[in-house]
Length: 399
Ligand SMILES: *Cc1c(COP(=O)(O)O)cnc(C)c1O
Image (cartoon, rainbow, N blue to C red):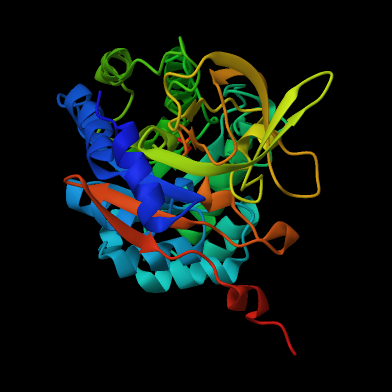
């Protein structure tokens, strides 16, 4: 497995300080290769869901690998353009957005997936048949690691419910809208590949209603291992099942298959290095408080997510149980009752799987500064975002 060594991470911590996010370019490439190899025999395009990690230097790596990019805001699309993606390699899968943002996306000439009847009607009125567009559908399937990251179920706000296909057809007919693709994204951390097959089956009922389809977009949500013993989505099995399902699809023209992996590409490529500020013995736990909190890495608190934590300063130390917490005025437990090599104040603790939804979900809560980001390629660490400074807290405040 491609990974950075404790020595490399220690040296990065010394060079750039902590807390710091570190991303490993070769690991991102390895994940992308796994996808393209598995789907070699199918006509598939991958759109990296950039909301997982949008640093422009990472986007450039993604572009260099040959992937496309999926955006969840107009600003992400603009970042992708800055990174060098051409409009045809950018997809904007919108949700709940103002029509003006869709107009902005159309002005950039990028692919757009529309997720409401209301915006579809506005789109039809303005563009008629002149701008091919995709439909984000809600397949009414429950899937994903937990409810917060489940997006395709029958109470979800995402997508146009498939049971409203007649309303869609009326609008398409009325305005002669060019529907070029159908999209579903059922959630994140989907291990069971049959969820995708179920999604395809739902789409197969919808496909015959549209004449000009070019692609079916099955979204992202491939699972990666977080805990020891965890497994990831079996991409080869997925490729096989998708190919099989599409081999008898009910459509006159060949359909390209699109995917939007976010986490799968960048999660394991990321490391978050912190320093232990304080050790505190109590009757219920030994607290190790690091120089960070959910203002930098919120997944453990927000999703109850597990991140493996390694003490790279004392790898041979006796294993003990710790509560790893942060330094802000709020309960911020990263891990409870976690076995870690003996921790001393000043030790470096590394959080694994920090590439996806790590820095990206960070904030300045408690008026603390956002961490730096470093990209390692060919074993050379390069600073790709400097740590916030005090001035960043004052930026935009009227003094
Ligand atoms: C977030 C998102 C993804 C990526 O999900 P991952 O779990 O990171 O793979 C893909 N498509 C859409 C529309 C999304 O919102």
